[in-house]
Amino acid sequence: MSFSAPTTYIPRQSPLHALDARVKLVLLLAYSISLFFLNTWAGLGLAAAALVATVALGRLPVRPLLAPLVPLYVLVAVTVVLNCLNGGGGNPGFDAQRMLAALMVGARILLLAWASLAVTYSTASNQLMEAFASFLHPLRKLGAPVDDVALTLSLALRFIPLVAQQMEAVRRAQYSRGAAFDAEALAAIKAWGGTLVPVLVGMFRRGEVLATSMEARCYGAPGPRTRLASNPFTPANALVAIAGLAGCVCACLFL
View 1 (cartoon, rainbow, N blue to C red):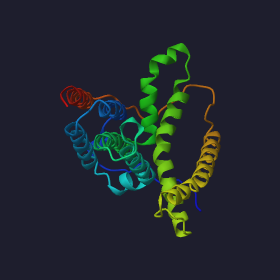
View 2 (view 1 turned 45 degrees about the vertical axis):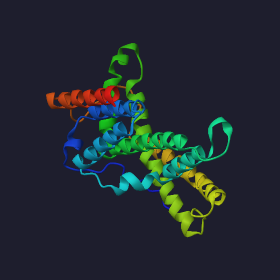
View 3 (view 1 turned 90 degrees about the vertical axis):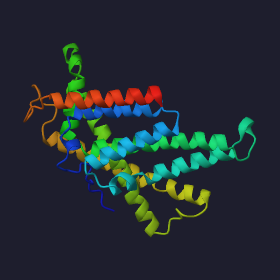
View 4 (view 1 turned 60 degrees about the horizontal axis):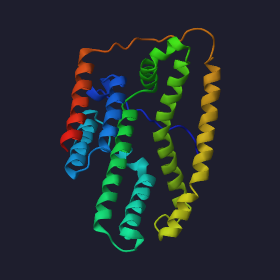
């Protein structure tokens, strides 16, 4: 099996791609917090509509947003089924109220995952690192390794779609070898368990290649870090941030 790194940034000429990475990260955080404050289906529907509008604005393809999260769909589905069959007081049986609560939790998790993928697909790695470094800049006066922390955070965010895509590639390879992903529950769980080892091996290989490439580029050499181009924060970015935060606050208060 090939372990070549898949594309996690989809270049486009769109307002979403042109938006400052700092604004996208702040709005992603606000959106994530808002999802767990929305207690109505109307609120979650509004959050889903906002996500669809964002994806359309960024001209992002739908398949890369949906296909890598198949394991998450399975996990959410199993969680919903188990909650439906577990009645109140520990008594087995179908419980409609528990089903609605489980569906709402599952919807929150899926919306959060899709929003995270939309941000990573529309933001280059260097933009993410600069955004994290900008947020952590006040700690530089205290001697904190801001650049190293920013790089670690950007790599962690970047590896989220990489792990999902690696999982999908392993699943397809295992399926072609007769893995019973579509069988009954226990057999399907066993088949999914057999994908974890290749995925972990692949992630360790990626980490080793990344460490080697960073050493080859003299990362960690003494002296201040420099940037090829500056990324000023424009009034348009500020207006988008204010509007997005205001929308999240209003949704939490009234929905």
